[in-house]
Length: 219
Image (cartoon, rainbow, N blue to C red; front, top):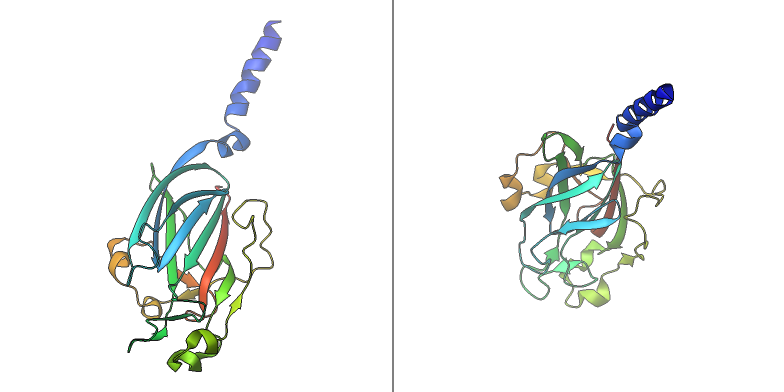
């Protein structure tokens, strides 16, 4: 009987330190995000935060700090949107500033207690373009861009931000420089890790609404 009790105690201790149990432990995280112009962040299928400034706000280039708790492994889902006045993809329509806008987003996530960086945006992330316009850049001078500008739009997969979703057919994101994106305002308020890269789809101007995914094992 004593041997059985000793065995059970030993077994319980081993189970407490196994990787499987460690992986199920809830951890506090802090995400820092900057987007041109708007974002929403999902972790393991749950919305944990989004840009506090509406996308319709002119020149909204603020950064956000989001705290949340989750368990490893992490499935990160990120929506990035560049402002467009309508499906033409243009902004400031009808004014002397009528133009094609551009986007860009950067993110880093760290464990709140230790400060350890566990995720940064890079070309390893998967991306799916949902809305693209204008496909014919010459329409930028049109007096009726909604008629003259060509666009491409696809439906958002309903479970794209959840862990089981398969993104292997999505292309990889592209990295861009600070100059290419034209960073400003809130971007300068954060001490970005050197591994945190500005990313977007294949075209900073044409891609207007994008879905990003990345997984962190926690090992």
